[in-house]
Length: 556
Ligand SMILES: [Zn+2]
Image (cartoon, rainbow, N blue to C red):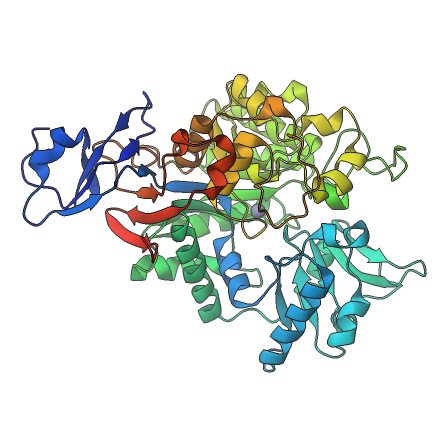
């Protein structure tokens, strides 16, 4: 390849899927310092092997660009792993056993925190306070579910928060109630905030350890970069300062864009604060250059913003159209100003009215500011009205897909489809349609809502079926909306170049090309050489960021 000097690191004998514009395959990759210097056939790169070159024989395994997650919460995910973690369990009894065991082994903790329970385990998705009261009669418990939109609390927590039968629902949430009006034990959306706000903030060291734990987990899955979907100083945990510290110390090995939290209780006046946070928000591999606007909730608790009302249990229309967390007029102005200031807007836009409002606000920004390079993106996009599919391309709005959710499983079949009704339920996760309409697709996990393993997520993106061994309750093995399946190449592109694009990192990462940073993942098999329904069986064996190995499987 005509380079002078030998490589520091040389991968040979592999199935190198470069994800370059031509979707080139190669056998070998040479790295010097933190960059890729050559990509090609083994024979072409043989000259770069020197006496001090570390040679990695891939033995036919797959080398891909390091995966990037366009919407993830690694700090809270990492903290969850350190607290009462319910994610891997799926019965009420198992949850209660785990909570009791955690409480017994952490007598010093004033609150029992953690979470990760699944709504499909409980009637109507709502666990009851009595079950917690039986094991924790006097220590408060606050346990968000997997998606973080509903929380399970005991009577002590409700009392401390001052919630009783006379407490009205907040504007942005709902207290689940018994027939007599008293709280039932599940609080949704903003009603969860009525409890969480009285929880003492986590100490900075715990937050920092959570970040490092989360990062290590992401690296073990081949992830080398991500967009943290909520970065804030004012929440229960201050992850902004944790990132600054990790960036400065060098502990932050992943490349991270932080999405600063838009406080929906405030208005446009907060933009000055966001500018200040961005100014102070660059540290090592961390940059806080995005703003997260949460425009609606989720379908399962009827807070996602829909155009036509939700149906009730007998299929009749209710009068509930969900919640637009930010008034659309305010949203237009906020996005226009953020766009003009060079911010990226990262939306939580889940159902079709929120998606439309989010796109309308980008359209408003384009009218005022012209075309910018904000790369604004809509995360979740669970329900998209067909009329809005072409608008992603027209507006340069990136579709930020969380593909793991695009399958028949209990939460979809029991808590979502009946209440959306036809034809609306068929508008869900329209990834194939978005691609056919020319949209740019990025991908992410929303961990700790669900697994951050890109191989499991790509499995569902390609098959629209849960992996056979998946922990969720899956009775229905039908392919979910088969026309919306993606080909494997598109799914890999989403988790590499697509997400790199969202992070404004596509010039330096996202593909294996000379001159780019050596962010790489070794997968145990060539995914293209195996049946599509085995994608989730593959696993990451090693991960490199800037040529440094940040993960190696113990048995590899
Ligand atoms: Zn999220």
